[in-house]
Image (cartoon, rainbow over all chains, first blue to last red; front, top):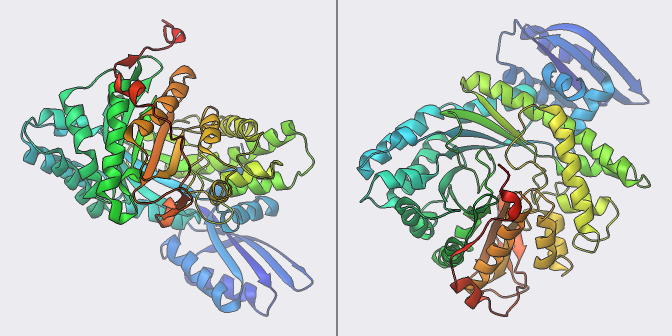
Length: 89
Length: 452
């Protein structure tokens, strides 16, 4: 089972560190990261393996959303299936 | 690897364009609860609903968290209650209504549909008792939805039922006059009612359905609206194509959620209803889609054509995305629940007559329309008869959900709040149809009903 974490907003120091920190704490293994910074806008997409998660997926997404709230970023964690089903035949 | 454009598109649809799953509806057969004693019928009904739907709300919330997609309503539809009432010959149907309300509260669902009777060819004794009890049942409950099917393409229109339903709608409004006449907002009169519809107020669990199943109703007028907005100069066949693509994506999401819910609840997956269901929220309006196609106001000339295109394209996109499309599937045009429709009705451009024409090509019918409080029952019946005739002749579902605003007149507003929104009191013809309605009897089915 894999999930996609997206982080969008103004660039600040340590975003990747903090997001991956929450993943590590909850045993979500980061498989792939793609990030880009256009001027000061930051966009990151992270594919994580959630099959050995130590908490509920909803708890992980709440923690990430809370971090987003603190940093003024929009952070979403969503199950990979939703993207696959909407955009692949 | 997923591409970032797709990821961002999904997130934008959900965050900015109000994409959501409108409802997960569990259909439950209550035929095995029939009993000659109303009390034991009620306890069997309560037991079965609360057992089957025990985890419905929690499951919905879990899926919501997993996929990050809002699921607005969790609902239940049941076997048409008239069939249950028929078995208990002496009990008061309202006690069943109260039981259903209690079951809805226990399971946490926001609506339970199926306080229904199917009388397109005639009444059984249970049907009559249920219909007579509707005004009281809707006044003493707030989560119960009632529906009556008065016609079908195969059987014709039961005009005795049409006559009675005009009176019942008025009574329901009078009994809830102190609650913004909310009673009739939970009552719909149908022609060609589908047996697997997950949307209220017309949802019920048909007798041809399995013991228990889950249906999903998707939404997403906002998504379609902003997709169209990107093509201001495109021809209409291009617009149809854009709508199809968007409907495909929305439906795939519904299919995913439905499949997951069915696994988690361990009940069969019923259907995806791919209706574009508006809400009063900004950016979630079907009227605004039509206006996005180039009409200055919804309701002007051209609206029926635009709606026909929209309705058809939604179906075509959706059918490609799911092999179990059902329910109503198309575009809804409930006036009070759609910000654009409210505006158009207030400005006087969108009239009852135009809405009637639109229902010939949309997926349902005259929906959430507020009419003056002094509208006679026979006029309400005549509105129902017109709508049923459109459904019967065109082999489609049509419905009427009108709310006589007791004590209010043309131009006043009725405010229900929440998803039901608010609607201006719309003018109706003052001339009388009383003599036509008083005739009763049956309007025979059209020639093309004989297809065997």
